[in-house]
Length: 137
Image 1: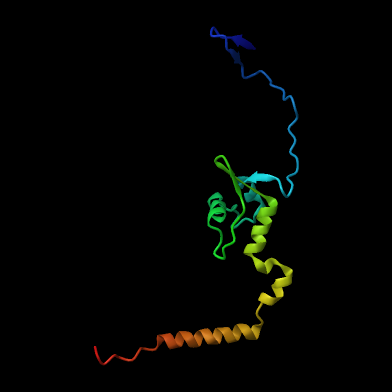
Image 2: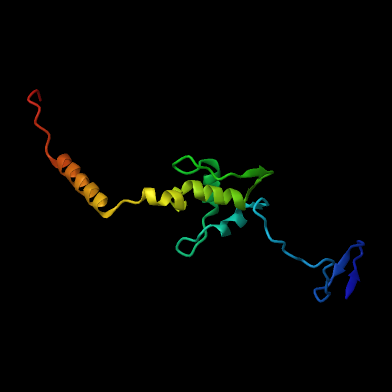
């Protein structure tokens, strides 16, 4: 049921059905296709059942990680966009132990861990010792 208003505007009833002219299809996103940071959150693993925060992604784009690696993104208007390839490069650069070629070189053996623990304990005990009293005080 369609009514004409006195101002010439068409009023649409809630029972009228509006068919879609073109069917909505979602094309697969390629590695180089730009997507918003909000969509890119789904590509990263969840922590405690929650997605990575959007604020975290913005921080990774602006400041990067402690090792200086930044998430590559571009700003179009007021929105930030990134690609799947850029996210993958960021994760690989931020976690070098994920690379199988370097994984074996970063692992310590059991004796190496024990030696490091013994050394840390000795350094801690040295720091607990009282310094000698300064006679000038």
